[in-house]
Image 1 (spheres, rainbow, N blue to C red):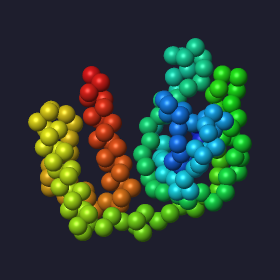
Image 2: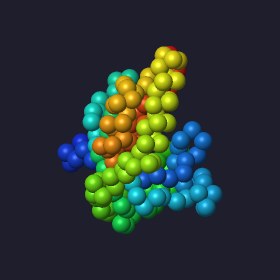
Image 3: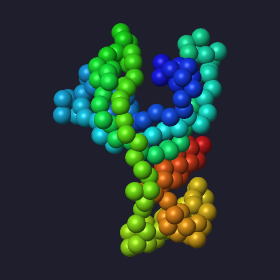
Image 4: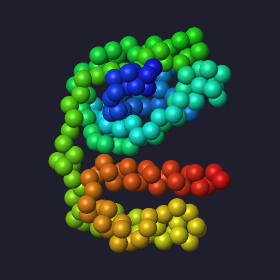
Amino acid sequence: RMYDDLLASGCRRFVVPFTKSLRGGRIRYAEMPPEDRRLHATASVLFLEDMSEISEETRDVVKYVTSHSVSGRARLRRLLNPSALFKTDQHGNKVDYLRAEVDLLDNDADAFDAGVAGERLAGAWSDVRRLAERLREPHFRSDDDIRNQVANRSSWKLTELWQQLQLAVRSHRAQ
C-alpha cells in the first residue's frame, strides 16, 4: 500500500526508523514483548531509485521489486497512526504502514570527524580490503579511495557505503 501511495503522490522519499524485529526480520509489535516495542526517534530517509511491478509473477497479487538509497536523516516528531504498528490481517500481514510528522536533519551537521577515529576507520577498512582481495571477494577499490571516502563523507554515507559492501559480499558468497 505504501508504494501505491508513493506512486499516486509522485513522492520518492520516505523515512524508516530503526526498531527491533522478530526472527526473520518481520516487525510485528503485537507479537513482541512490550519492552521490545520501541522506535528510534531518528530515522533514515530513503529515496526510491527504481520500482518494478511483478504482479504477473505473483498470480496477480500486486507486488513490487524496489531499490533505494539513503539520502539523509529525519527526526520523528509525532506518529499519526500508531495503531499501524499492531494491525494485521488474518494471515499476520500488516494492513497499513506507519505515518509520522518528521523534521529533516541537516547532514552537514553530522559530518564525520576524520581525525583519529577517521584514521582508525580507514586503517581497519584497508585491512578488510586486503583480506577480501586475497579471498577474491568484493572489496573497496584502493587504500587511497578508502582514505578519500572517510575524509569526505558524513557518518550516514559511510554507513551506507559499508552496507553496500556487506550486501555485495553476501551476494558473492551465496553464488
